[in-house]
Image 1 (tube, helix red, strand yellow):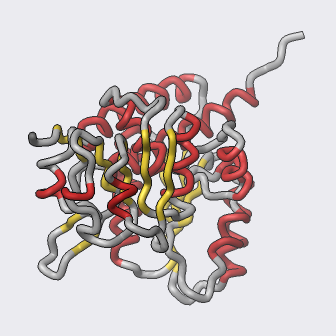
Image 2 (cartoon, helix red, strand yellow; image 1 turned 30 degrees about the vertical axis):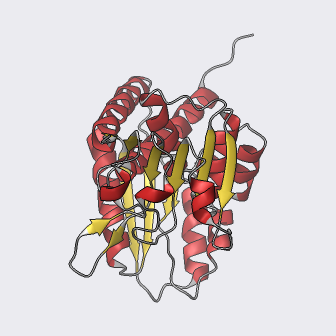
Length: 290
């Protein structure tokens, strides 16, 4: 058996087209959706991510404002900027690119972003809403994974879902979204004993560890849907995921490639969150009827 490849690029293009139509509808009401992206420092990977996000915004018709700050920017200066963006009516979403320089408190910066503009979904208020099953914003990568499962018509309700990696950005919110969809969820971490025994139970396996090739084909249940969130650059410059693709595709029923799988969906769902924020803003400006 060779796994079906889940094409994140194609699905991302479809999602972006949907966003573009929603942008047109808002423009017809006189509202231009806007996203501010703040980049601090010269991290090469972050610069690529920011460039890709800005390009995706412009292609979908959203206004993007990229603000680049030097490595020596103080935390106070960054917080002041975020507060200004909170008050800017032309900006509906704010994204501060992570990681931040070591002299900054990442949690403090995230909590300073208005929850209504936190399109990354990392603010503690949005995390709490997700926990209660009433999310304002869903974190972009787990949101993208859920759209992939939906597009592939994967039966999530009642499925055994195993997530490898328990980060606040991917693993934990992924578990909550799968729980909300009716899956039985196991969340594994670096202390999990006999990881293979856990992963081999999974009908849906999501891997997000940042360790290249950590999950191999013998750790996968035949026919399982494998979602590889990892993206790692090897010494030869090639990009690989956290799943050993060659051995996994011989066992899985469906699998995401790296690159071209989850990555494009993360950016697509950032656009979705931004347009949702703009639509909520537009709704508050509608005249009330007596």
